[in-house]
Image (cartoon, rainbow over all chains, first blue to last red; front, side, top):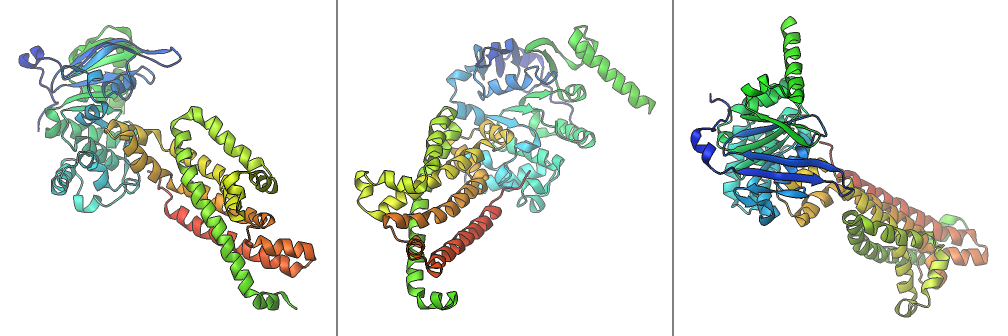
Length: 266
Length: 212
C-alpha cells in the first residue's frame, strides 16, 4: 500500500506549477465579489485541498480553473498557459472533474457514463471497452454486474466510485474534485476516502479537492488551503495545519480535537 | 331511429369526417412541434427571449377560436383554402403548451448533471442533444399530449370556415336541431381525444426519467 500522493520533493518544488492562480478574482454580474485576489500554485502530483465552509468560494475557485466560470480579474495558468488561451472544451477534457454522486447521467448506463469522455474523443470501440473494464476494476466494482445498470440502481457509494471512474476515463493529468464524498454517509465516506488515497492511478495526478471536512482534508491533502469569505487565509502542510495560529484555521483544528475527544470517550 | 342505427347507416360519412379531422390535427401538430420545439429550446437558453415568445404564444391562446379563424381569413396564402387556414389556426393554439413544456423540461434538468456535462468537456450542442433533450423528453411529450387533446376539440370549429372534419356534423346538427347528427360529430371527436391522450400518456410514462 502506498501513502498519500506526495511528490513535493526538491525537484518538483523548482518545477513550474501545473495550476497557478494569480490574483484570481470573481464577481457576480451584480458586482458582489465572491473571490478576492486568490494566489495559489499547485505543483505536479500534489493533492491540494481547499477547505472552508459553504459560501467561502472554494467551488467557485475550482470552477474557474476549468473555465466553467470566467475570471473577473487576475489570471489562471494551466500547464503554463493562461486558461483564456485554452480552448475551453479542450481544457475541460484535459482535466478530470468529479462532483457529488448526483452528477451521473440518469439516462445512461454505467458503461456509457464511464465512457463519456472517450466517446467524445472518438476513441475506437475496443480501446474504450478495455479502458472501462480497467476502471471498473480500479474502483472495485464487477463489470459484469454493474456495466448495464443505471445510476439509480446503485448505492450512493457505488455511484461515487463510478463518478471517479468517469473522471479518470481519458487519463487526464489533472483532477478537480468538488465535495466528491459529500453526499455519502460517514462510514461509506471513510471507506472511499481510504481507498481513494491508495489508488495508484491517482498518485501521479495533480489534484485540487474542495471539501468542508477537516478529516478529509488531513487524510487526502498534501497541502491544505483554508478559505473564508472569498479569501485564502492560509496554506499549510497537514502538520503545519494542526499547529496553525490563524483564527479560522484554529477553529477547524479545535473542532477536530473536540470530535476526537468525543470519539475517545465513547 | 336509434343512435346506433344512425351511426351504422352513416358510417361512411362519419369515417370520412374522422379521417379529415385526424388529418387536420395531425398536420397542425407536426407544424406546432416543428416550430414549438426550437422556440422552447430558445426560451430555455436565452431567458430574455422568454417574455416575447411565451407572451406571443399566450396571446394566440387567448383569442377565441372562432375569431382566430376569422382573423386569419384575410392572410393571403392561408385565407385561400379552408384547410390551410384551419391548420394554421390549430397549430397556433398548440404552440403554447409545447413551448412551455420544452423550456421547463430543459431548465429543470438537475444543475449537478448540467455542471457535470460541462465539466467533462461536452459542447453546448452535445449537452442539449445528449443530456437535456433526452432528460426532458417526457415533459415535452406531456406538452404535446395537452396540445393534441386541445387541438382535437378546437378542430371541430374548423368546420365553420369549411375545413371539414367532425365539426361538420356538429354544425349541421345544430342548424337542423338534430341531436343524432351532433353526436355523430361529438362522440368520435371525444373518442379521438381520449385515444390520443391514452397513447401519448403511455409514451410519456415510458420516457419518464428515473430519479438518481
